[in-house]
Image (cartoon, rainbow, N blue to C red):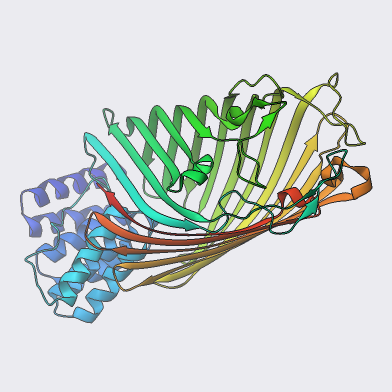
Length: 509
């Protein structure tokens, strides 16, 4: 009977493609009578009713398919079209807004925004999009290009992350009084991302990607704060959906080059040791593979990820290099209790193993004969997300990170991290995001200034961010961002306040 039902369903799809909607509906009904009861059957039945101008029945069938996650977005969009055809503009707008606000299908979201604009401008098109019955939930293109370019202008009120108050440097045997100079200035942020994918197999595509981004200050006295990163990668993406399951696998190899000046935050000058320039110390080349996968079973999603990298810093003769190996593995699980709420759990282990930097002793010294530094991190997290309305959702997150210094434990710490995020959509073109994060570190053994007389090291940090996006055209967005970052510590060398504001445009294809 199951085979018969599948054959009837396939025959119904064939009749639909031949514009024989009434005949297709007959086959869909026979497939249902033969035992088929799937969201995809309800979806195709609803579309066929729509084409046959049986809008009440179309609405009933599409509402059933809308309860299934992978078909929810396209079902909501088609419910909007169906309501519009019935003359109920208010109901059509409600369905289009639900399709616009979902996060799973960016193509449906764009179409919904366009339909909303057409309705609000009282422009009735013959059809905002052609509806097609589908044996698959999304048409697969042979090739796909994702290109995004961003450029803007910003202001930074503390370019070099300088402490705001004078302090005594207890790490220097002479214990000098240091008077930092806080400097501000204008900068130009630039980001370019390109990804070209070839979908040569049914569920798998192969891609190459490149991104470059940086921040460039306009005052010649501030150019030591310029930095940029460029990264190239290639790999594959696998994605397969069935009625209530989905599998996604991503694997890639990436290589990146980062350029940054090693400067003194107190005055912004390039660092020197014994009269030798060491300003290239923070620039590096990193490369390695990364992998992640997710598996969804209805409302439950589980995933795993792994990454391995070699970080090769510029060689400087006067001080140890930062070269190290980085390895990361992680697991996550997510359960969607309702269509508006979910809970996510994460567990992660990562390690950094340095090749040249020697480990610290419990008195804060760093003898040359010591083993090299190895830090191991264990991190556990929990996040809850709740949608309040169709245009508003928020999330709260807690993470606990335990770092172990594998020599004698001098740099051990436990970090508690709290984050909250709010997303609000105002109208069909304006998005507003706001987030705040607070970190508090509990150092077990480390001293401020690595000086036992200064007491145990304390460290807290807080970051706030507001991002506003206005869609000017289908491909062009106006973006404004303000970010504030505060670090408080009894090691006054690393304590600072910083605010950055930016306005720019993003073009995407």
